[in-house]
Image (cartoon, rainbow, N blue to C red; front, top):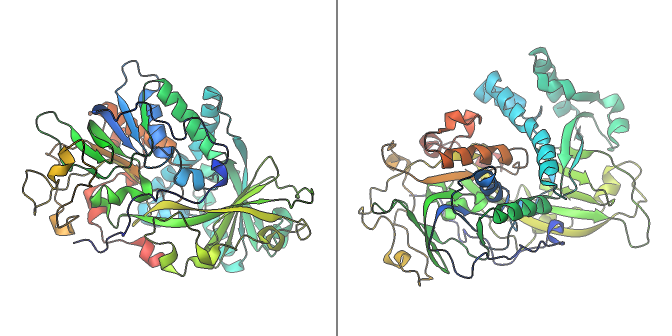
Length: 499
């Protein structure tokens, strides 16, 4: 039996308004066809970063593309992608000691280089597709407000330099004596700087979505998925997907549903958990004064929590994090799918943030213009789930119908299909059944860090979808990203230790 049941595993119909969605694209609430297609080759659940880039990769340069339908519960790019900080900030040094300890030096280097490569990939893609999304290459400052954590990171940094990690070549450490002057952050006890970028994420994704639709993809917004048949129909080799607008059948399914994944793929219950975050936009006050100039993006760390920000070309600042205000209160963020509301303990956190954090901002008149919340997908082992979904048979239900009520076969039904009483098998039911055909793929659970991960992850996923002979090992992705039975069986729970 599952250890928890999420009260509302689906996206809420309405939500707080993020800045990134204040300039909506013409495809925001688009439906390519009036009626839901009866079938398709590839059905993608989710029209955010993971879902849209999967479609883009499946179609890019493909003379014989599959038929693709993208289902989105709300509007296109209305979930986590349009609610983040717009920060493309690869993990170059801070998480490396933990990676080295868990996975070894070689894999840690591979993971870091994988993320770093996204900076050039974004630049190339923006130029190739001529995407107007305010893409900006910059440097990011990682600032410590406590001396002990700064020194520990410096020790780890020295070890990695001595180990010959080439990724350290463009990382610079500034000690406490100069940290405040270099970073501009009051009370800085040490800081690192390294390459990063930032972007208007909604505009980036919506442009790629328009490219995918121009190449034949079918988008259906405000069409939430209620359930997915756990097995394929032996007669046509397709899975059945139930929505309030009817049923659609597909040869292959892609879960690009991030924090909402467990609601429609119960094998990921407790493995991908919806976690709520909060973000803001800070601007100059209405008196017409301009804000001081910031050239870098930032992550500011204190007492195990952090805040992050990017400066925008219009002079405004996007600031997120605020964990110091709410992380201790688990019920405000853990296993929460409600982005209609702010995280109440943090709702006023960003007021005066720039004045109390940065030198020279005390009389800036900076004010909090907007605050919004968003739902991220955090994983029990802090790694994304990418690849072919492991086949997990249910030993409780009879094989026909396989954990799927008759209502799921009726196109006119608007009632969610009912899972079996077990909901998700306990670890004892998870067995190795690779001989059974599976047609479901996943790219989800990015732990609030999807920007420097997803593009290459979905490119690899697309190669697996297009050619059954391509296995995860052939894709060039870090092997630790591969979703597997072992990870679904594991009792590891990083989130419970964090809270």
